[in-house]
Image (cartoon, rainbow, N blue to C red; front, side, top):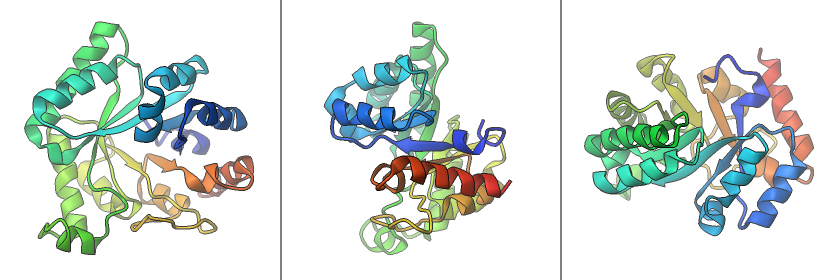
Amino acid sequence: MGNGEQAEQRIIVALDMPDEHSAIALVDQLPQVDFWKVGLELFTSTGPKILEVLKSRQKRIFLDLKFHDIPNTVAGACRSAARYGVDLLTIHATCGVEALKAATEAAQAGAAQAGIKPPKLIAITLLTSISARQLAFELKIPLELPEYALEMALMAQESGLNGVVCSPQEVAQLRQSCGDDFLLVCPGVRPSWADQADQKRSLTPAQAITAGADYLVIGRPITTAAEPELAWKRICEELTAIG
């Protein structure tokens, strides 16, 4: 999953809109986009209705709710979310091994009960808005940032998850350590012509794919562009150019 796909299939566009109306308007504006991310803001606003809209249009869905709680609670949440028929689902690696294993089993069970394919469960290693300085001084983590991201990824892999979300700057190391069958999904990707905004550990789309990313999550460089379709096309062309 990932590497055998065309460039445009490896871009997940972040549907970071405040309500159903604006979300559907963006989907209509970018009909060529196959894979959409639904995050906390939109899901809290619309509930599962937006997922039904996307599925009715044969879109793939990354449900990015970043579950983080005790094992029993995240298991229940993953069991319920798996019934939506989404393709990717997130949980924080910092929930710990017990919760990660429980979430994996629950997602499988929830999908089986619904008679559908289970989502790929992927763990958040470290939010891409957090810098090495913040990791050390605010979160009091003594490890260097790349080492911390690797430890979270290895824990997720050992717990049976399908992959992780990581910044583009950690991709090469994680690909080497976790192998080719482990999904690496990268938000915080910024084309050279786009504003970096609040992303602290960014690379361009081409750099991230070259480093080993399976999927890129790109939001504002496309969705807030003066002409979203042209921004989308420009990124696809840059990825196609790297072969």
